View 1 (cartoon, one colour):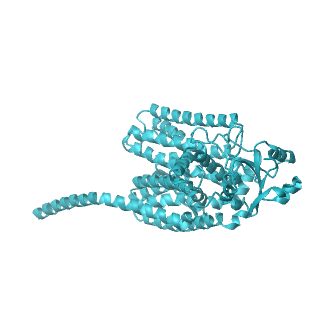
View 2 (cartoon, rainbow, N blue to C red; view 1 turned 90 degrees about the vertical axis):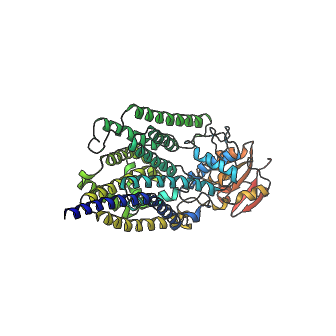
Length: 532
């Protein structure tokens, strides 16, 4: 009997070693399969929502004005001057349209791609979408590492990424979604640093945080959150959950955060100065907190317009459920993940207050808040994982089933919203500049050069119609006085006038321009101005 027991014990040891050997060999295969699963899922998402169908669509739909402003910077790098530090727009000024803007690295990349492949706005959309996809990918790697479960990691990323607003602005000309993606990449590097305390990963965190904040200043929140974590670490808050201090030395964190803040503020100071000296203040460089009653107005807009364009009803239920689970099972919540989530929440409260006015009319401002949602769902999944390991393994399965049905409704909401934003219905509530989409070819055939100063009426944006027809000049806004319009027409360099509403123009300023008509195009009338 003793010999049998000894034999069984030896067999058990041998089989365990063999099993570990097999699992170690399968580990790379498992990793590869999980990455393949992620990439296939992401590709399916883009296909199902309809993103691939609209990559070649010109700037349009909601906030086409802001889209055209950014796209105009890329186009002017390509057409006029590749001087990185002199971003410019289509609007004519004595300074050649030079203006101050957030760090224009995205627009510069677009321009470089235009130089190589030729001008095609689909390239700019693809670059933006690629950066956002990279953010999703790195957060998936982060979640997979923490949870040791690819399906749960996929559920975390999907639950946070299934935002109609986020998916609309991912393949776009705006900087918000790429900036948010770089924040996610930065946090991936922080958790890599946490594994072995290698300084290079902390440096990567600061590098990606700086780049994200240069593109969108609110991303400064992440390095500040890291500084708060360093303070808590110094106080011993993470002793129970971390085998060693998060930051063996605090001064590298202080220096890193200080450098990021310095670099970011230096650029925005330069951009503000650039706009001022060229008298071309186009982009908001300062907070706009709002006035008494603004918060009430924001709530009305959220309820009536934006709420379900941010996320679906089911996603909000999951967010609330996450908070409830974290409160009930607070003893099992990761202190580190909870701290990051909490500090991001507090930072976002400050951000919303400082830009309260912008949140009313600009749906894309919510995108900068979304790292909070990614960490909220990651904290929930980590808590479920801990409970499953200790008490009830089937909790993971239950979690995945619940999240699957949640995501099913969320992705359908994304698809419907995406279709609406590119449908004809959207033009009842926003600018319709579609007649200008293919006007440039007609202008060049008529001998009109890009730098021939052109007046475009009526256009209540900064330079949308000018950008879409690739002309330098001025827009006539609906609020422009007769004397201001006369000044534009009488400017020595004004050569052409393009109108989309001749009746309105004639009522404001009776004229005899009919004899100077060059051609018409999709309801637009192109005039050559007198004596030019």
